[in-house]
Image (cartoon, rainbow, N blue to C red):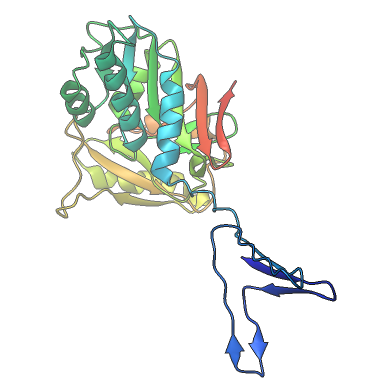
Length: 292
């Protein structure tokens, strides 16, 4: 807000830029980006107007994701075999790696993509690609997450790539996770958003009912994932996904993971437990790194 100051020998009057009235009718509003000084020779009067500092730009969620992604790429060195994650945050990581390869700052990188869309993005950027069959041990994987609890356990797979993500990241010496601060939860399932379970198409409803019953005490609702065309969503592995929505967080993630995996017809679940080496979190106050 600008402030107008009138100073003379006999009196001092400060007028805010909101309003000043003369006989209840006139109104003065002053807006100025700079300091204005008027000097009167006989009465030593000066007028000064000061503008407020410009507001700090508000970072979008994509801005925060990019900050975290750029920090994660600092873990990458030339000659590494890298697991390339899937999702909106991981896409920023892949783009940055492609940029550094093109500039020559990184060399001899081999990427192991975790989905068809990551494969296509990495290929378009000129990143050399391979598969787990040829590189069964990876130096590092970088990926996003849908939820992160205080023990760095994760929910992943809302992008539909949970099976390949878990296979690649479990084969990595280090697994770095990149998120914005909206993904932090007190307990897994606590965001109220989907925790995915990949199931075979055969008798999918049978497993949907069993999964919902398993988490009855958490107020779980199980839904078959539907694509934009109104048809069941099909993963890269030709399976369906059952999304679990919890009213209260999962009480014991390790036990829950074991019980889900024991169901015949369940291929994989989105609980990534005791896998993350470090989690990079971008928030409005900057980027922080959480590690065990």
